[in-house]
Image (cartoon, rainbow, N blue to C red; front, side, top):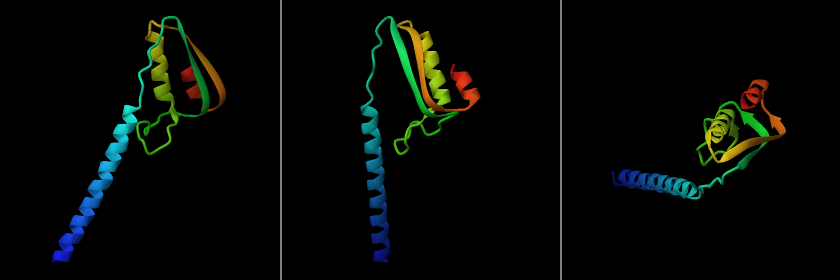
Length: 107
């Protein structure tokens, strides 16, 4: 009976340790984000390269590589359009892998 409880205690301790490490890395990655101040009459330059998926569900995960989602890109362009400090937006596409509808929506 003691072996059963000892094994269960070791397993739960191991799982709590793994959970603590995941929470620690997630909090460290969120601390590294910097706030950018936008000066008046700024031109926003967006270099569009690679795959642009229609919707990126895993954009906030620290375990997956971050790919650009069209919905988040469009939301950021709309946010920049309403910013009084941004004078214009310059799109620089280079080897963009996206559908026609996605490209049309971004433009």
